[in-house]
Length: 93
Image 1: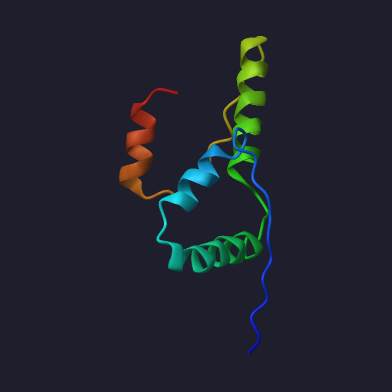
Image 2: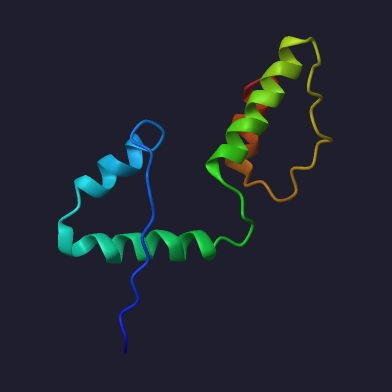
């Protein structure tokens, strides 16, 4: 097995979190941890990221702020356990 080396650059302002993470790893573990992170990214089935979720929430927040009200879904409790359904009903939503 041949070893292949890839190099990349980080911006000391924009990539502070990545740099901090790498700096806190023992030098002999950095390649393995980077490999795990890349494999985890490639293994995402949906491709959905935390940034995607954040932007969706911010969009909803803006709509609510503009006076758009979210409507409740039609009542379908067939798959809800009875104790959970009772707790949800007690919220009065």
